[in-house]
Structures are given as C-alpha cells and as structure tokens.
Length: 235
Image (cartoon, one colour):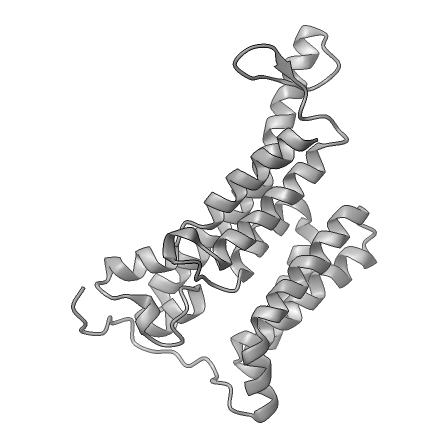
C-alpha cells in the first residue's frame, strides 16, 4: 500500500498546489494576495475581478480535486480491462521493470481518498505561493463529486439555499462542510469516505474560523455583486 499511497499523495499535493486564483488574477494584472480578503480563492477573485474570473477559478480548483480523486478510479478501470484481456485477475501497472501491484479493489478507494486529501492540503498550503492558499471548498467539491456524487449534490443544495437566503458565502461553505459528512453517514457510504468527509469538512470549518468569529459578531461581509472590471493596479 505504501507505493500507491505515496504516488497519490505526491500527485494530489502538486495538483492542489497549482494556484489558479493567483494565476487568473495575474492575467488581469493584479496580485490577488494584495486585494480584498487577500485570499486566492474563487470568492475573493469574484469580489475583486468579477463573476467571470471568479467562476473560472472555482471551476479550475474543482478540476484539481476531481483529477486527484479520479485518476486512481480511471487507472483501476483501465487495469481491469487489461487484466480481463490477459486473464490476469489482479489489476497492476508495469513500472520500469517488473510488475508492481498497486490498484486492486481493496486499494483503489484508499488511493483516491489520499489523492483528494493531499489536493486539499496543496490548495490551502501551496508550495508555489509560500504555503498560502484558499480554504479548499472548490477543490473538495470537485473530489467529492467523483467519490460521492449524490452526497455532494445534497451539500451543493445546502450551499445554494444558505447563500441565496443569507448572502454569506462563508456560512454557506461552513454548512456545506457539515452536510458532506452528515450526508455520507445518512446514505451509508463506506467508512473510509465518511472519515474523509469528516476530516475535510472539519478542515474547511477550521479555515473559516475567522469568518465564524465575524458571523457571530455580525461583522461578516455579505456577497455583493460588482461590475466585472479589474482594479487599475500595475502588474
């Protein structure tokens, strides 16, 4: 198990660490770490640069999570076709010389879980931006839609209802982070996925601790639509 988990952690972290929020903002000529909440997350990018830029960052961040969680599933599926064609009953990869058995029905979910977990860590503590990053909501959503699509859609519904009622992105994200493990438990998902949902949900909530403080004080900013024009700041 050590080899596949290490590979998944490595790929997941560096996928997650790609700072799309920072890169998209730089394309508009600004350093997102110096504007708004100074976060490279999709919400701050949307506040600073407008809907198009923010939605682009959200989609790209979600893709990071989907790829980190999804490649082991795709690789295992491909390996199963190969093994069926060759009468080999164990999914395996050829690595340089010899055969390393790393994707079996027993290992594929732990590998996918590890990939997503490290993608969220990479997003929040990116080595490319001095270990600064976003709160991991979009990256988590992208991975969970691959691993638990129905649960993720429930959490998305919670997010949408909360946001449109309150206009607080932070509150919507916090409640969605609660809905993921609750939905996973209610729908009898595998224990490992429930554990991942609890871990990532808790991580997202911890990263929102400052927002929670402002919500309790009534000083949290509501999301207000702005014109999609970039500030006039030199690159």
